Length: 255
Ligand code: ZN
Image (tube, rainbow, N blue to C red; front, side, top):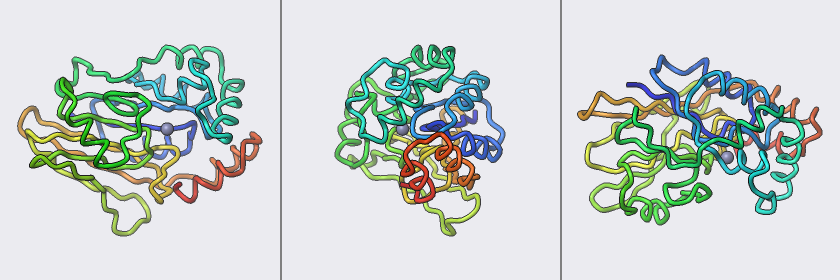
């Protein structure tokens, strides 16, 4: 079973299309949330994701942009884009976003896998370091393979020999399409972040996603991807929408 993992698309249709064009053949898709916010194509992204018919975990921007939570926790730029998104989104997309399920999701069709936006204990938690990941690895009643987003940093963490360690995909050239595969070990625990499709923050501007592959109980692996996309077009849309210029410049910086 090959599962395509998408997270933090953030209304960047150019990045999403580039990822889908580069993704290998897969059996299922899982979306880890934050479809909207920051970038300028919220309707296009909602339409594309809804047409895929895959499960989606709601993200904090999906919640805020659809009016379920206040914008007070957002910085000025994020709040401006959320307000713009609210008035730009078609009503049926707003409704759909409002009804997305909160994580953790453990769909029956994916035994042993768990999906969250932030972390298994809090949909808004940023799992940024070993200390936070270590706490999450020790929560009772969670799966050994947890897929998360929210930080916009591709990679994740593993728990091996009673130690939490980071997983950092390596890309030798930093150009073009690159992939990095890691083999998972049965009995060890993993927090896997496919990275952000639409606003990476790990100093690599290329769109990020991942594919999880399992052959039953014996072996599983994750392949991380980085894919160039038409970032100039995404930036033009942001400026044409009168969104803050910083949202356009940060895309090419990968921050
Ligand atoms: Zn996000």
